[in-house]
Length: 220
Image (cartoon, rainbow, N blue to C red; front, top):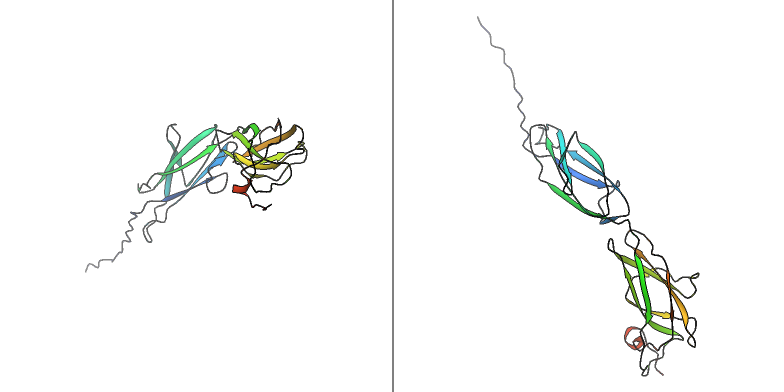
């Protein structure tokens, strides 16, 4: 008498693609960096239910360079060079499921901004507005081709500076004197923290007509 032995075949099918996340310098991607960036790609395969085949490798490409294939679930590499960069990546599991390509864009800014000029915008009359002593309306200019000019500060002597404030092309400032030409010092900071060299310009007092429009007024 022949007796058949019963066997069970547990067939698991993984149809789900893995997912990959990117870290730049150990954190979520930012828009700009001040130097070479350390990129890290981490792939995870959750599979389909109990069917998890595991991550086979990660495929990535930086800018227009050839694609790189890295075995395993993590890839770490530097990205260098001033300017804009694009990182494209996806992972593949053991049974060949491909993750849709993901893209991270960021820039590297290794150049300090430039403070360009400071002038006084002259006025023609104050009407019935009372302006604080020696206050002028300054025209300011600065440039940065990378992360952009973000903050600025002013000084009358190059030693005691105002607090950093958002960069603007116009600003009120109180001169050291309204009776003779004086110095105004100007410095800016870009989006990744680079500071410009301070500049100094000799200016003369001129009434700030626009005080009435931009600031609270005191009626005479």
